[in-house]
Image 1 (cartoon, rainbow, N blue to C red):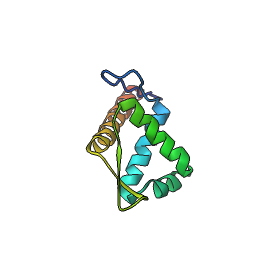
Image 2 (spheres, one colour; image 1 turned 45 degrees about the horizontal axis):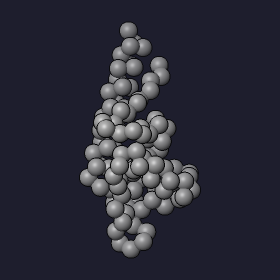
Image 3 (cartoon, one colour; image 1 turned 90 degrees about the horizontal axis):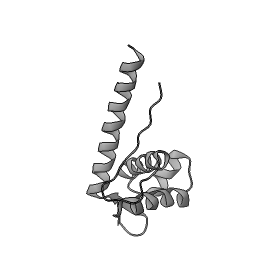
Image 4 (tube, one colour; image 1 turned 45 degrees about the vertical axis):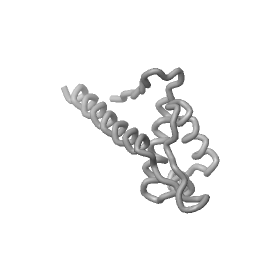
Length: 106
């Protein structure tokens, strides 16, 4: 069974698409692991500029930064909002999968 996650952001005119949000979450998780966008993008098989653009689009949708530069020009870390976003996204994703599995096993 397939499911779709739609994020409705309070007081936001723009809401990121499911694909964009999933890609951004994967990138944010990669940045948390590697400390930079480039290795996170490389792990996902996408180029740096596309990765950076994806993050920027979600930041625009949220109206706040998700990454903070550290250690010169290449390093970065997640903001508190980005950490919360990735955790909540994974929580909702797991709940949606459990619900889909429950329905399909009934």
